[in-house]
Length: 315
Image 1: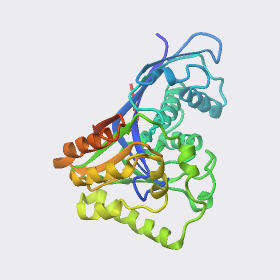
Image 2: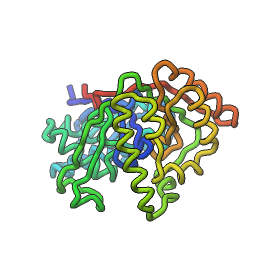
Image 3: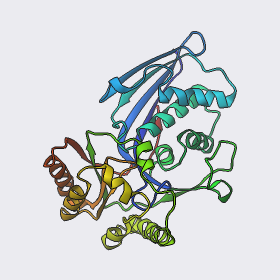
Image 4: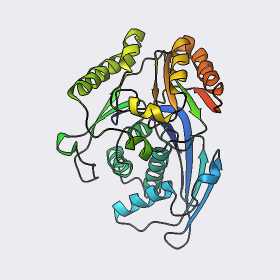
C-alpha cells in the first residue's frame, strides 16, 4: 500500500477587532486533504476536489496545497515526490475564514508526514508563516484554540523567514460560554483589496486606543464578561476602513447586537462577519444576522460554531 496521510485543518477567524495581524482563533469548520504517494516520476501530480466551490480550485501545480507540499520538500533539499491529492472543501474561498491557510497548513503537514515527519510543529509553524506572510490564521490552524502571535523585535517590521528567530506564540483562554457566530455572504473580498483601503500611518491616539482595547479583549475572552467584550471589540486600525467594502455591515452589526451579541467584527479581511455571543442568545444572533442581510438582498450562510481546540489533525 502506498504511503498516505489525511490532514484535516480548521477554518480560522483572524484580527478579531483590535487584534489586527496578531490574534486569531480556530473554528469548527474544516477542509480535508488526503495525500497519497505514487510510484512514478518525481513531480507527477493528480488532484481531485469535492465540496462547495470545488470547480474554482486549481488542479495542477498552481494549487496552493501542492505549492505548500512542494515547499516543504524544497526546504528539506529533497525532490518533490509523485503524489495524488484529494481535497474536500467546507471552508468557503476568499471570505475571511482562512481558506488559504488551510491549504498551506494541509500541504505542509501532509508533506511532512509522507517525508517521515522530520520537522516538529515549531518548524512547520515557521514555514507556514513564511508562506502566508503573517501568523494570525496559520498559527491557530496548526495549534487550535485562540492564539496571539508576537514577532521578535528584530523582525517586527519585516516578513519573517524560516531561518529567523521564532515568533512568540501565546495561547489565549476562551470562555466556554462564548459562541462565535459567522455570517458568510455570497460575495468575495480579497485580502489585497482589503489591505489597499488601510492608511499608511495612524495617530498616537489610535495606537493607544487599540492597545487598550486588545488588552481588554484578551481578558474578556478569558472571563466571558459581556460588559468588557462590548467595549473591547472596538478598533481603529482596520475595521473603520474595511466596513465600506462590505454592503450592509452596519445593519447586520446592529441586528446582531440587538439580538444579544456582545459585538460584531470583520472576520479576517472579510466579508464574513463574526459575532461573539453568550450561548443563551447565540441562535437568536445567528437568525438576526441571516435575516438582516437577506432583507438587503444578500444571500448568506450563517453558522453557530465553536472554538476548535485541536488544530490540524492527521490520520
